[in-house]
Length: 448
Ligand SMILES: NC(=O)c1ccc[n+]([C@@H]2O[C@H](COP(=O)([O-])OP(=O)(O)OC[C@H]3O[C@@H](n4cnc5c(N)ncnc54)[C@H](O)[C@@H]3O)[C@@H](O)[C@H]2O)c1
Image (cartoon, rainbow, N blue to C red; front, side, top):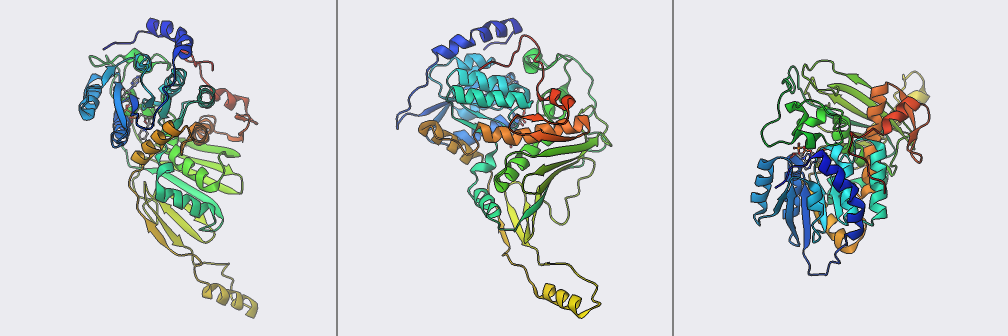
């Protein structure tokens, strides 16, 4: 078991090019088992691990985390004494490893994913893909350059019923979709995460390694396990955490993968803890084809959005699609046309026509289980076939970008115009400066 030192990181990163040149991709025979390593086995890593352990043709042979109790928990669950690491580059040095799953906090995704590509591993990487747009683009380039199979952890893409739903919606199932509203609603008032003081990290936690490329700050428990998502150095907050799922589903059903513009407003209005991200925010994206998408973050009140408890509300001219985590309900809209003041026979006729006009689509209701195991299955199938996964790196990047630029709109309080080809804003150089950030030395976003 090893700790990582910054000096060691520089030395080993300098050797990464050589390692990449030496690494070879194992050619998998039909009967070969796929050997997988996990980087990050906390909350999500544990769920994704379950998804991989459910597959009959793969073995999880190595686990890496900075926190020994999580390593031990994962090893016990796997049951076949996987190799344990604290330095992910040692795990990547394993020549007989075919693939890795990266389930660390967002600020580590780019480095670990690109290094994995350079080491000849296929990569399953959690969403949001990256902390900044430029990192995500570099990850796409790395996957292409090193010919890696990639899957981004937007697992709904592998849910068969949600696939059917996306096709139904894209095919005009609820008419023309003009508005999609999505939500993160929970009451965290008044204390939220609390206000713990800075202090010393617990024994065995390498705080320096946890920070990695992020700015050096004193240890605070709220910046670590799970809670990091309320701090901008490691996460885009709930807009990227939940928003990436919603924007990804929106992209899928609209057939568009980038907004034309975005604006956002919000702040810490009620919750009194040491989080950085707002407890209250509203984002609006404009999409090609005249669809507005919104994301509402309401963390000081927990009442579900009326009229149904849902995460997404997709409004078409013929009906509404209410989506929960895995299920959905389509509710036909019976109203067609306007209700006129019935002053003339012409208006009365128009009203009569409207009243006689019933819903033109059928209601439907579907529940689906969490699709993480199917997402892992799809990844492993593609590792064998070298085909493109259901949520490959470019797809995951574009869904992540929509939310990363929303955070920039929130920080700059602007209505930003987005050029999705150039991946730059066309009306603000200030906003463009947020597309990348300087890694803390000696960390460096790898050239590919
Ligand atoms: N797809 C989904 O529905 C879903 C759900 C939850 C979380 N996520 C994503 O999963 C990622 C992890 O979130 P989480 O909730 O599991 O956080 P977590 O804090 O519970 O787990 C992260 C783990 O990574 C480890 N880690 C940190 N730096 C490391 C490094 N350099 N090397 C090795 N291990 C390191 C930590 O010790 C921790 O155990 C985030 O990107 C999050 O957005 C996705």
